[in-house]
Amino acid sequence: MAHEIFDGWQHPLFAALKALALFITAAAAFRFAERRTIAEFSPFDWVTAVAVGAIVGRVATSTDTSYLTGAAALVTLLAAHGAVSRLRFIPWFRRLVDPPVRVLIRRGEVQRGNVKRAGITPADLDAILRRHGYTSPSEVGLALYESKGSVSVFSEDVETD
Image 1 (cartoon, helix red, strand yellow):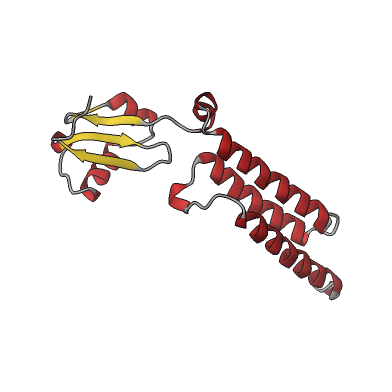
Image 2: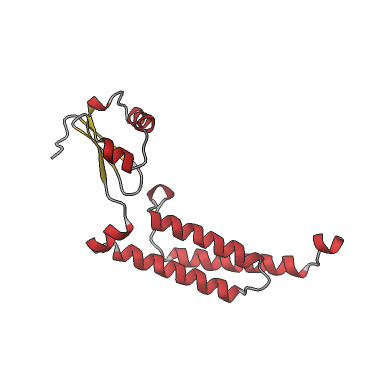
């Protein structure tokens, strides 16, 4: 029974060394990647962040996966992320990876179809407006659901055409 809990010092030591090596590899690779804050993550940024975490976690504790295999997966993933970041400057490619900007409110009128497509409930929209200092959609000239998930709200006097 003790063997199932404590199987020696070698496995934990190797796991710690692999985790440290993978952390250093990921930190070095991210050094060359574009800098974004979590609030500015697009969907493909989230996929990359989750996948990097999964690779580091899985490879560090796996006895049948080497550091080199994990490092190759990390570098490949981050290179693919970099390629997608640059390809987003091509309009047709950007439409594939970035959700469209949606008009939620135009001249005080809630655009219910776009609100629903954005996955925002009426209560969510009310809360968003309150955070921006508005008590009612009628006070809003334009509210946009941005491609990265945030909502921009502009006053009634903003040109909406």
